[in-house]
Every structure is written in C-alpha cells, then in structure tokens.
Length: 126
Image (cartoon, rainbow, N blue to C red; front, side, top):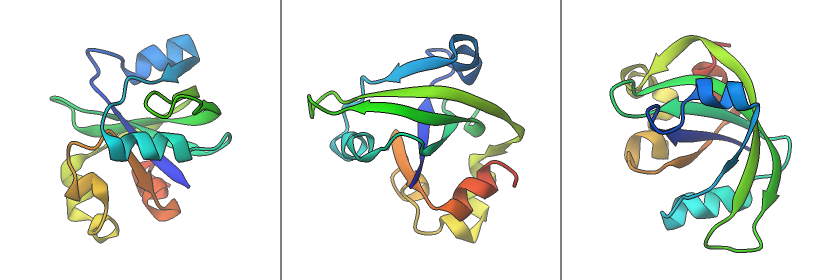
C-alpha cells in the first residue's frame, strides 16, 4: 500500500524532511488517519502533500519503521525521497478519474490517505 501524508509547509515542509533526511511522523489525532498510520509497513512508499496555500503533492518518502505500541500515538519513521518533477495540485487530483472514490477528495481533512499504485504514479508524474 502507498500513502499520502499531508503537512502544513509552514510547520514542516518537504524541504525540512529533505534537510533532516528522516523524521518521526506523529501527532495525528483523527481516528481514521491513526488507523492508516498503524497499518503502514517498512518499505512502503509515501507522497508528501503540502496543505494551506499550496495544496499540492511535492515529493516522496519511504516508511522506515512503525512503532504502534501506543495505538493513540503511533510513531512512523520516514525517510526523505525525491521531489516531484512538477507539483500536482489538488485541482489536478480532483480532475482525474483515478481519485473519484479517494479519501483525498472525499475526506479533505484526512491527514493520512491510502493510495493505489496508479494514484501514486500519477502524483509523482510517472
């Protein structure tokens, strides 16, 4: 499974992740998003999505490890990947039939969203 992680770039941007190389993704409170974090497995691919004024997929990361010993605060260690060749905007996503049933479109406030392989490829311009 692939996932999309939303972040407010003024709080923690993809550039911050690239600088740090790894980060712990925690602090999520939505029950569905928490379930998605707990379901992650090392090696799975991630898309980093900037919220706020940008509203676009900007890069990739990989799950390094998952500590779900505290179900209310799973800690997922991620490693920076590459920047997207061209950021994919929310308008681009909404216009693509691949995302018709996606929580990315249907549940706008969800901060951790599962992706199909085809959705991942679209977001990364592959």
